[in-house]
Image (cartoon, rainbow, N blue to C red; front, side):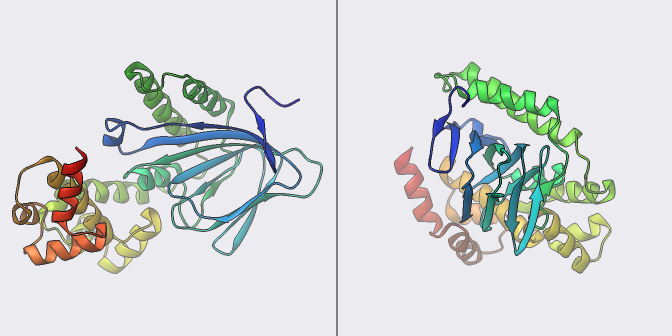
Amino acid sequence: MVPTFFQEYEHEYAEFLYDSPSEFDKRDQAWLVRMGRNIAKPSYRVGPRRIECYSIHFVQEGHIFFEYDGQQRLLGPGDLFCMYPGITYLYYKNQDKESLRLIWMAMDGPGMEEILTLLGLSRHEPYLLNRCSPMIEEHISGLMNVLRQKDTANEAVRLDLRGRFYSLLGQLMSSSERQPEHRVLSWVSKSLDYIRLHATEGITVQQVARLAGLNRTYFSTEFRSAIGVSPAEYIARVRMDKAKDLLSQSTATVTEIAYSVGYTSLYSFTRAFKNHCRMPPTDYRNLHTANS
């Protein structure tokens, strides 16, 4: 029997739930985008595809083949896999009579890469085994129940949703059976905190590596492996996020903003901003001023 809320599609019976994060929600490091669950038909196959955010899929029942970066994994009940932006994935049901049920949760935000690292996931190994406990399934069910409410724009409902979302992430973290070594987590977390705090002061990768007690080459390699981007790219991202905030929310000149976020000249800032945002700082300000 097909559960309540499910609709029939070509390759599955499924329920799709969508959220519309508010500007207040987007001040966080992470927010929910959508959730769903399904019962796969024998022909179930998704991809090859890329998505615009991060999405964790939980295997409730049955087995699924998951392909990424030229590799294939067969995952079963209690396992999960994660899709990252910009990477092509393919997943499909084995052609047999075994039932396959999935639940998924798509998320976004500037802190998602770090959060997934803390869960034990990475772009190079985007799956975990034996992770979905009854407690986690209970948290998932509660989160989906909130999304089914019609008035999800209500402030009280939004706070409830955010609380349940972070509680679920906390449960996933605490139930980890494949956590990165504490030593690695320690210096990665410490480095990220240091960059977020001092990126606008013109810090260098060498300074951050020294803080972590590692040589620059090894630090950069391990940082990219854990976070998905190089230290230099992460520093630039933090600077650009701050610059965008100042452009859209302050009256400071572009030159003032350039020096405020750690650049030594207006030219270097403008070039970096255009490469990052695909438009000059003045155009970004005009666009967001017009929309405010």
